Amino acid sequence: MSSTTPSTADDAAVPERSDFIRDTIRADVADGLEEVVTRFPPEPNGYLHIGHAKSIGLNFGVADDFGGRCNLRFDDTNPEAEEQEFAQAITEDLAWLGFSPDRVLYASDYFEQLYAWAEDLIEAGLAYVDDQDAETISEQRGGYGRPGVDSPYRDRSVEENLTLFRGMRAGQFPDGEKVLRAKIDMQHDVMQLRDPVLYRIRRVPHDRTGTDWIIYPTYDWAHGQSDAIEGITHSLCTLEFADHRPLYDWCLNHLELPHGKPEQTEFARLNLTHTVMSKRVLARLVADGVVDGWDDPRMPTLRGMRRRGYPPAAIRAFIDHIGVAKTNSMHDIELLESFIRTHHNAHALRRMGVMDPLKVVITNWPEGQEDALEAVNNPEDEAAGTRQVPFSGELWIERDDFMVDPPKKFYRLSPGTEVRLRGGYLITATDAELDESGEVVQVNCTYDPETRGGQAPDGRKVKSTMHWVSAGHAADVTVHEYDRLFSEPNPGALDDPMDGLNPDSKRTFTAKVEPAAVETPPGEVIQFERVGYFVADAQEPRTFHKVVGLRDEWARIQKRRQNN
Image (cartoon, rainbow, N blue to C red; front, side, top):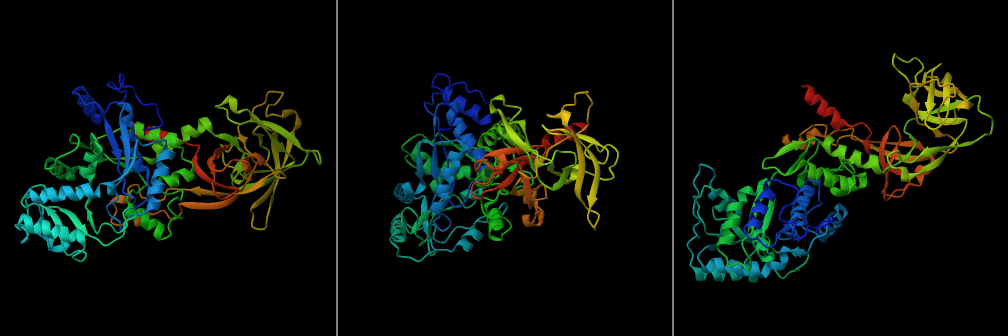
């Protein structure tokens, strides 16, 4: 079940949320369905990404809404690509998102039953052993508008097929020499019903069954039957599985099931701009060294998002917001970031950090004097309290907060201009020191000692408030700042998605931060004021990853669309 409180039997009949899937289930409940049972069935051949989060949220959410159950079932029928490491990672990511399955199951738990049902099909004259290779079988299936060709082995007797199939299991034939196919209709308009392969020979050890099996069921044979064994009532799949539904139903219709027949329903998958969800492309990014692993903060994997400081509550809220649709569409990644930003605005402690430091010397500051100024930890949360921030006559400010010869409407620091230091004093720049190349290396200022806390007794106003860090108390930290991994809005539409990569998707530099920032626990997000939200790395001390900036790009996009 999910981390949210499940509905009771009495109120489950009228769940709050409504979409075409929940409307269907609501009708089933009204017709007498006693319990809703769903499942999340990943293949343990990679790490979960944000697209999986939508399926997770839907399957667990539906179970919660109707007071039912949701299983985690690993579709582990392809041992060449699957590893226990991936299964463990999936379990951890599911828990991190806030969901707990009713049961953790494996398709390999059902290998014996799947095999027995395959023999039942053979005995019913609905399956046969084919000696042709995969390329020939594929060619003979034909295509849309092209007729299929019957296999020369299609009319083998029941007895011969049973003998050969049992021989396949016993290891009498080499890999690839024979397959078991369903006997349906080689002229069917639905390509998946043109005698699909149900079993193939693979001498590959399995993580859970070892060498007990050398024949493995295909996805189409294992999936629906696994649903039936578990008593799944609603098999919720993304749209690419719609073409498989006729075969899903055909298999179940020809078997004696222990429970009622599951109902498959498809929904639109999650697509985000500037993002790819293909496991193949994501694996290539890792293998080619484009990213620093599956948990690279630029990756759309849940591990990457966790390391980048995306809170699971915000991901769940985003998934709920986009809802469930029948047609695929592209969502702006800025919308997801808006949910991340909103969450952190309410919860993240404020700290001061200077990303591109420029030295400021307050020339009239009393020599040797130090001060401690009170700063609010989170203006959105009074309970977060305040902290003491050290202040001295030498500070760091952002380099772009000062200009020697500023343009009009530049309200930050420049010679003769007075600004407010956040929580500190009003200062006025007097002059700047430049190096041989003309770059500013130091700004000299005076301060008004009567303005402690940032307010002038005479009521004069300034147009800019800037963050700062006391130079003598500052700590150096490593900051990783990220841009889009793909500059192309829809990299999946390219012939090669790698052509849409952003060569400047990561920038690493050293920043100066106040002492309290260094005390940030690993994995916790803080806001560096006026800069953005940053998460302390879980493994590397004094290292921060930028989560999102402060500017709400989603609001800007919405405004632009309204104006157009």
